Structures are given as C-alpha cells and as structure tokens.
Length: 483
Ligand SMILES: *Cc1c(COP(=O)(O)O)cnc(C)c1O
Image (cartoon, rainbow, N blue to C red; front, top):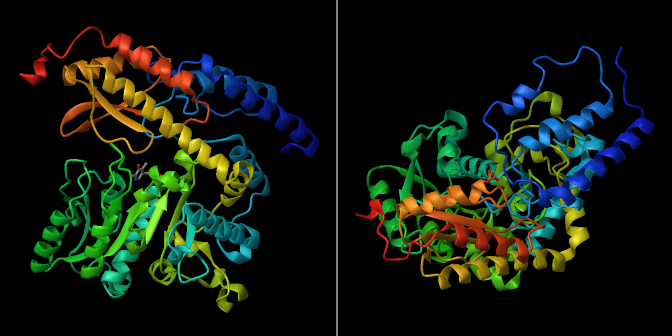
C-alpha cells in the first residue's frame, strides 16, 4: 500500500530540504569546484535496484551528502568560471518549488489560466526590461514564450522560417525543395541540430565567414545568399548571434537585418548568454538592429539569476509560429481556444505539456527589481574587466578576443601546449574551474564570471592561481607547437 507523505510530514521534511540547500550554498566555498573521481564512482554508490519498501526521509537526505553532492560539478560555486554561468538564486528556487507544488500542466490556457497569463506578462516585463523592439510585445501581433532552452528556440524559429519560406507547403508535404540556414562559423551547435531535426541535414546549414572580431561578415553572407539563390536553393533562415558561445562576438545585426529584409529571409537573433546584459542601458548597444529580427531569444537561466530551464523567446508575428506548429486533436478542443481570445502555449513549442516556469521568473523579477538585476550584470562585467587588465599587464599572457560582457578569453604567448597545461594545472587545484576554446585555431582559456556568489576575492584568487601556475615561461620561450 502506498504511504503518501502527509502535509505535516511534508512541512517538516520540506524545511529540512530548504535547510540542506541553504547549508549547501553557505558551504560551497569549502568544496572543490569539480569532483576528482573516475567515471562510475556515483553509480557504484547506488544500489542496482529500487527499494522494495519505502525508506525513511532521513536516509534519503543523508545520501544527498554522501552520494550526490560529492559527485557534482558545483555550478553555483564562487570559483566556477567554466562555459557560461547557469545561475540560480534563492527566489528562483522558491518560485520553482511553488510551481512544483502546484503541479499545473499549462499546455492550454484552459488547463491553467494563471500559468499562461503570468507567462505572457512576464515575457512582456522582460521585453520592457531589455528594451526590446515593441513588435515583440504581446499587445501587438508578436509575443513571447518560455522555451526550455535556446536550442529549442532555434528549432521552433527554424520551423517557422521554413513555413514562411515554403509559403505553407512545408507543413503539408515536408521538405520538397532545398532550403538553407545561414549562421557564422561561430554559430551555436544547436543551429546544426535544428537543421537536422527539420529535415534539412547538415548540408542545409551554411557557415558564413567572420571578420577579425569573430563577428559574421555581412559581405560573405550576401555572397552566400546570391550563390545559393542562383543554384535554386531557397534561403530560409539567418541566425545571428549576440555573444557567441566561444568568445562572445557580436554579429552586426543592422547590416544583417538589411540583407535579410532584402532577401525576405527570417532573421533569428540568438543572445542566449549575452541578452541578459541588455537590462543595463549601457549594454543595449549590443542589441542595435534588433527591430529587423523576426525572432529573438536569451536565457535567463544563464546570467539572469533564474534556475535552469528558462529560455525567453519572442516572435514578431505569432501567427506564423502558431500556423507552423499547431495541431488540434478533438480531445484538446475547448471553448476558450475556439473563441480565439486566449494564448495556448502548446502551439509555440515542440512538446504539448509545460510546467509553470513563469513563476520562478515572477519571483526573481520582483525580488531583485530592475536595479538588482542590473547590479548583478554590472558586477560580472566589472570583475571580468579587472581580470582582463591583469592578463594584459602580464607579458606572459595575451587577451585573445574582445570581452564586451563577463567572459575573458586569454592564453599564454608561449603557445597551445603551455596554455593547455596551464588549464589542467589550474583546474587540478579544485579551487576554481575554467574551460577552453580555440580562437583562430589557437588554444584559448575562458574565464566566465556569473555566479551570484562570486566576488572580487574569488576572481583575484583565480588570477593568483593562474599567474603562479603559469610558471616563468616568458615570451622568449618557444613552444613545440609554434615551430
Ligand atoms: C548556451 C548557448 C546556446 C544553448 O543554450 P541552451 O539554452 O543550453 O540550449 C545557444 N546559443 C548560444 C549563443 C549559447 O551561448
């Protein structure tokens, strides 16, 4: 017989879990950022089969300390500088807890009116917060929706673009002509994945050349569009990036937008990480030209203190997206949908079902307020700038790319091998964690600031470790790779 946890037990254990999370956060500083164990370590700590009879909650909680926490990379650690941040915050966690407790499935307006309406308002709030063009507001023909990730945003933008480029034919008959998607050589891997899922294949994506700042070259884009058109290929979508994943390069959206308008191609702007910076007026220059975009997305789950998953995605014309994705079986028919007066977000995404993710955004936006969010972004950018200054001042190092946001790409002048060895040594300390990329073929370290716990002290520690472990190899040292 099932023994449900009654409300009083839930209250008690719920408090214990919140205490556990609070202790976890306050103790993060003393943990290694990444575990040091070989693959299979966590598996070996787990029984091979589930328990026959229910266990005490104390045992479950105790195993968080012995099985789970030691086997994690701690993304909220103040010394986590890898990839891009995946922020969370206490208000976000609490909003998510409420969403979990409500257990609402918001596929249709009718299955949870507040779930839909709060989401619409939150996306309008975010559009206001980032000062996005008016065309994305729900009060006009556009509107926003929460996707799980920027990858899903790319996918639905691709499908809507195909719908438009084919004049609706794609929806009926699939891919009957050769369509193509364009992005820079620095575009995110999700663009290729979306093209595969949409049936365009890897040949359906053209990687356009970049300039010396690693931003897409409008001239090269035009050449590619011309050549494809002449060859009978239909250009369907251009994906431009504000803040590329490798180095945070910013594609020239105004020029790209002009070209897209001229060729009648859907423009999707992917600002997964860097979009959050637009909460600050001084970083809005990075979003100029956005009025050309047919769709735009950024991830509050990366740099805006909202726990994964939360991608904010907007379209300028929601009718095109809905036409591309809508399927209405009899069992979902209802008066509200029929009336045309409501939004059914199932038509804006790939899955049918959806969680009440807007609740965590609501908690975050209200707790921090616009000023609180701006302070978080500014702190990250300032810490990154401080770090870049240290790198520049040390003649053993060089900054490898512009750093308009909170990511600094840098390397040892001594070459790839020295840089790669340095990263291994720095991460082996367990006190900080950085990742790497290649810039124009050269091995490059990345330091991305973003955890709400990261302070000047943590970035200073990172620099101290990096400077010490880089050794004495000066610019005169010649690396084997370089000769
Ligand atoms: C991180 C990133 C993505 C993918 O983000 P997910 O939300 O994890 O799918 C897409 N584009 C860019 C530019 C990114 O930096």
